Amino acid sequence: MPQKRKDAALKGVVISERFDKKAAKFHAASVPFEYQGAKDVYEASLRQPLGRDFNTDKSFRDLTRPTILKDAGVIIDPLQMARGKKQREDRGAGVKSGEGLASSGAKRKRAVNKPLGVKKVKAQ
Image (cartoon, rainbow, N blue to C red; front, top):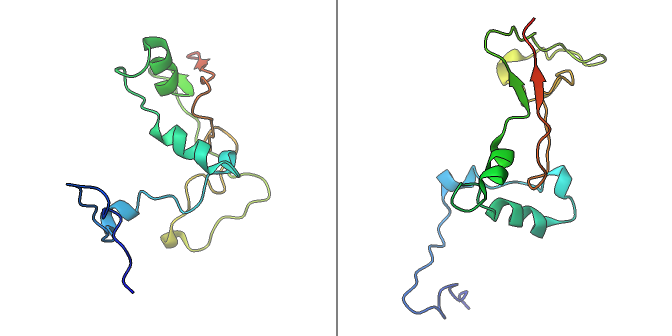
């Protein structure tokens, strides 16, 4: 027996059931570590709009502020390999973002609703 369409009960609505290759790259394979066991909380955080129209000015600035601020002209030291990590031999294969990097802010995690701590670095 064929499956019933998702839009069978909805009058005037047509839901496409095709696989969209372009949209597939935006689907998460698994829930991020911070949301383990709370998939509905993760989905709710994605639905929260970040724009000025939906949030107060202060909360918009807190949600979109970068975690580290640098003054113009400050030299940024290059990232160092973490101790105990070996460099990959196959450089052409690519490295996942943040893999093998020292804890210098390269890999950042934050909860969506928590304000960011801002660090100001002075010019030397």
